[in-house]
Image 1 (cartoon, rainbow, N blue to C red):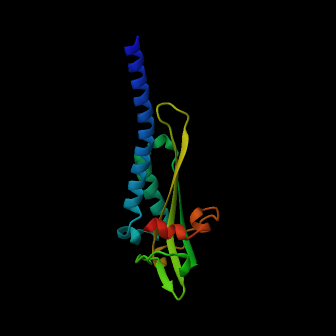
Image 2: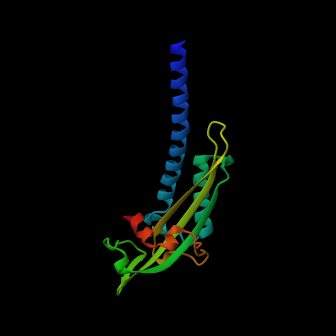
Image 3: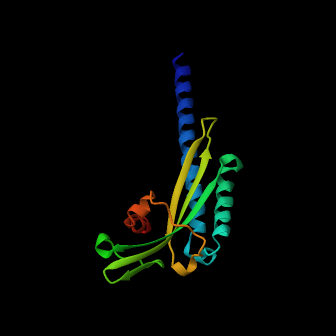
Length: 164
């Protein structure tokens, strides 16, 4: 009897690990795809917002599956912070310029959502926000401004911290 109980507990524990591990694995694979697409070697493709959005959507759907209800939003963030707000070194990325006592920032911000169902559980909404500094001339005019509720908009220092 005790052996059966131990077997049931071990199987249940493995199921929980599989459930949690599947979630982490899927999210990490999506992040890997975003890192490949939103990279300095691809900035020449950023002017075509619709094409970039479609590429991200296709790659994410390839990871999460056709039933996952994938949504992609791309924004062009343009802002300025006082240099004294940032205590780190000024990154040498395109899209970050020191101008007098301030830093001018230009970044593409990508927000991806999908629904995730693991082992028949109720679907969960999952989202990732990825940003990358990019010179403004590589961005097309069809990008919107990110919503004011974005943490990165409320505190642009977060963009610099994410880049470190």
